[in-house]
Length: 366
Image 1 (cartoon, helix red, strand yellow):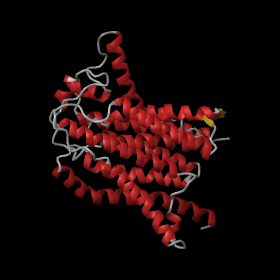
Image 2 (tube, rainbow, N blue to C red; image 1 turned 90 degrees about the vertical axis):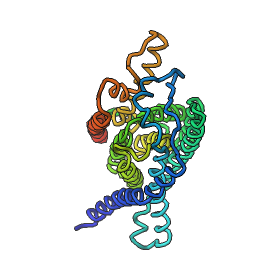
Image 3 (cartoon, one colour; image 1 turned 180 degrees about the horizontal axis):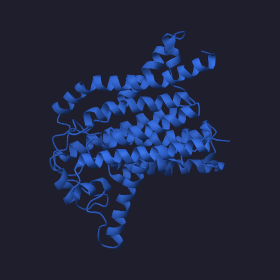
Image 4 (spheres, rainbow, N blue to C red; image 1 turned 30 degrees about the horizontal axis):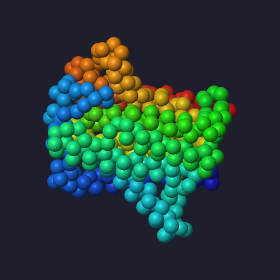
């Protein structure tokens, strides 16, 4: 085995180890977290939910009256905590044993993983606050949590900071277009970043059925991990792998019947991080991560579009186009079992991710 082959194998190991460790840690900490959630009754006390436009949602409430209560929220904590433990833990071991194998597994770096980790933690904390407020608000049988405007504002501010970091600290000023190369956008990268972060975050409403969001997000991050690896961004690929491992640990307990729900602390953390990863695999990595995002994350896009179209239709036409939005709840309303909706979303995610990978690889051919 020559030196190049050894280095390639080491890179593969560096990516796979975080995934396995994050999964194991997630599985180990879940019983303790679950016990806490049930002991403190961290669930909504009322199934009543309102739509984005503030209107009532009788069909949704009827479908989910037994699921919204008695099942804890905050399951997303498992994802970002287990991933963070792996990321920081391998960094600590790498510092202590600097001349050992552990130092080669450390993937926390300024150029590739600082900003995604920052987005993950900030998104998780903001989402955690929203979840706690939601639970407390439901004690009085009313909608709680941060309003949509406040959440969008906070996500937008996070996107503003990340966009500024990319433009000023990482010297990114272009957007990759498949088969055409990089297009200079200059300082406009910052507002573009904000728009993408907010748009991807809006896809977090896919967290509505047992196992749905976990399966979709694991596929999306696996795809971007492969793209990052192909760009030789090994640290970023390892970061994505750690997230995939932690998401799969969450999914193990979230498949029907769900032990808990991901909710905002998980969906906000993952969506804002996904937007950052998409930019990391764009011109910075010699690829087209941003414009491939609508393809790779098509289920998120469709979910968001279904809500927007539903609201616009009610305001303009005075009637709905779906029985209930988002789209996955419409399928429930017409009689599809929840597990069938979930598994078909997984299938669609795999197909769109594969198509995105094809375009990503073809775009890298010079």
